Structures are given as C-alpha cells and as structure tokens.
Length: 125
Image 1 (cartoon, rainbow, N blue to C red):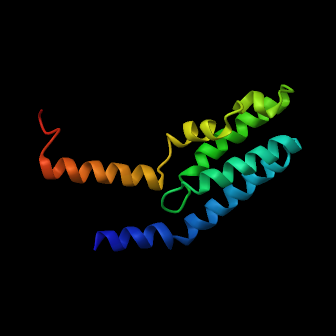
Image 2: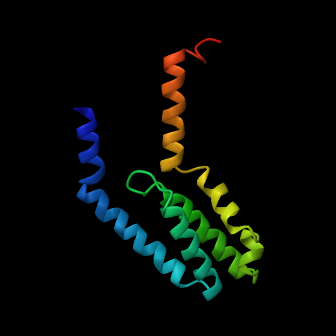
C-alpha cells in the first residue's frame, strides 16, 4: 500500500508539480540569457542528462541549476564554453550525473542489494 501512496504523492501532487514547473521556467529564462554557444551546450547536456533521469526527473534540477550558475560565471568571465566543460563534454556530464538519482544508478544499487541480501555478503564481514 505504501508503494501506491508514494506513486500518488510523486506523480499527482499538483502543488508540487506547479511549483516545479515555475522553477523550471525561471531556470530556462536564465539559460536564454546566456550567450549562444553556452545555450547550445547547455541544451545538449540537458538532453543527455534527461535521458538518464530517474523517477520524475526532478532530481536533475539542482544539478542543472548548478550548471547554469557555472555557465553564467564562465560567460561573465569571457571564457569559451569548452574551457568550462572541457572537450569531453560527455565525461563532464557523467561527473555531474554521479550526484543524481538515475535509472542506471538505481538499477545498479537494486541489483547489488538483491545479491548481497541473498548471499549475506557485507553483513558484519
């Protein structure tokens, strides 16, 4: 029963959804104020990261907010966007994703937990 309650709280909490949409639109306005090269890279990173998002995807918002701040700082300092991200932009994204709840991360954790429960590893060893 608690799983069903969690589902409804996660996906049908209309006040939270409205607040999150408002925050998202505010963040997108900040992105739109960035120089074109920063906007382009941000949108590519955002698309890449949404493909890895778990749950409602809102776990990505703090990471994307931090990315916007990083890009605003880089742009204000006149740095080219690749000086901020490095040339391995996918690697840059993967580092950002380490702090997010992702589909793959959740699956990895569930797999390891199931196996450890079955075979009792890690319990006082």
